[in-house]
Length: 153
Picture 1 (cartoon, rainbow, N blue to C red):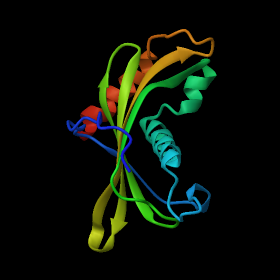
Picture 2: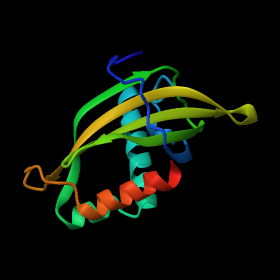
Picture 3: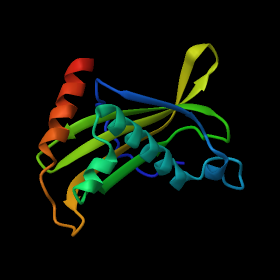
């Protein structure tokens, strides 16, 4: 099942990795993760990435800001099932003053430390006030992001 082909092949060089098991509540009657629920998994991994970065999503909210999705593309390659051990890779594809793109990939952890690519997505996001007005990404957030990338590159 494929939703779009607009997922770029140029991937970030630096990835944050989140490991987890697929929870039961994400699985549909066909015993696989429902296609829309993959976005829940991506969200959990982005939150984990922001925490590691030192700028949790709570900090955006405390400033009455949030990152809103303005464009999303996702390619489904292999289905996920309840209790699969997965690793979600999160990277920053690009950023501008008010926006950035997260590139994410979900891999199933297989025997002998192998990873099987199951799903890949790109989410373009804009920083907005709670009122909906676009605003520049917080300077401290950008400084932490640049430092994180430099330390892992």
